[in-house]
Length: 104
Image (cartoon, rainbow, N blue to C red):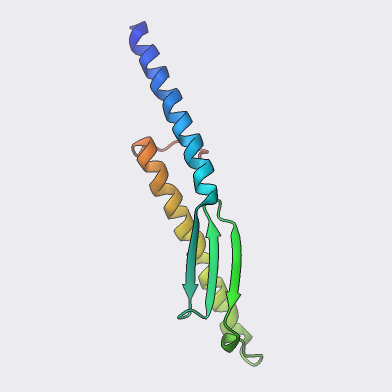
């Protein structure tokens, strides 16, 4: 029985190392997202940090700020969701689909 427990502990340690390496890698992965047909472009990383936000000057209408605000909101929300999906997918490959709270 002790041998089985040692194997389980060894496997857990290996998984922890793989998760740690993957977390570091995901921090450097970047996604490019666009909204409004390219009027808003967002670059985000695996930590859900917005790295870059570009707005096409043609999308800026001083008489219609609400549309620009909607484009930005849509783009940022889409970027965050896609980044979270990327992280979740990568983690599932390492953990075999086990839900381990607090990973990301």
